[in-house]
Image (cartoon, rainbow, N blue to C red):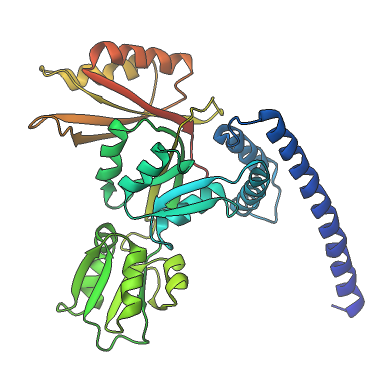
Length: 357
């Protein structure tokens, strides 16, 4: 390629950058005007963002991938939203956890992420309105449900208004180079389980496996002791300056964690939604079958069914259910009304747009 041809491409890019910058500021101006019209009302509308991202992906003709375009527009919306009012998002800390990565993926880098010592604390700061939303892990494709999040959702006044799916890649991290002298491996219990076979095959049996509160905490501990390693992700490695001895050590290559976004408001239908609820059955034969039959009767598809001890009595359980459709839709409303007549307890946890990968 000649220097003249190269220059023509660069000049074109420079001109496009000027045009893109102008358009971005025009978009931001409209966002600010919308914020002024709303006054003290809600600034974050997950259903609107879901519609924008779906439309952008549909219009995309490349060469950028749909995923790349969605990420770019998520950050544009995040920056525009911050002009109205920056959002504060609580998550299970410390900095560098997958929960923080999920919060940033969903709300963008313009949001303020607030580290919490536990999932309980993350819920509490939002319930006290010291933060706007909490992003909490609810299930992993390899290890199943996150029990503490499910337990908290039974009693919290917060509503589910969004979900995030995050591909989880675990790395073996260490302050030092090489494998010599490793005595201990730190990680969250679920991450240790997700990397169980790799650990069996690649680390000596005498290396102690220690469960800690989060992967970021594991990375912090490993940064203090050269004889220790951690299982954590890219954000934790960067945060604590650790070397990646081995990348992507998860046993399941499609390892994905689903997170829920909870706050104090409800959504309207976006066109592709999910409704989550928790319920308990009457103590009688065939009660669970009777509990689920309204779904089939109304043509509503169930995407998740999870049982959990109710904590109110021995051998009593509650059932967490996800169904397709928004709670405001007629067939979903009919299903919920039928469930309320048959169940001992029903709580709609929230209706929200389906996650965009």
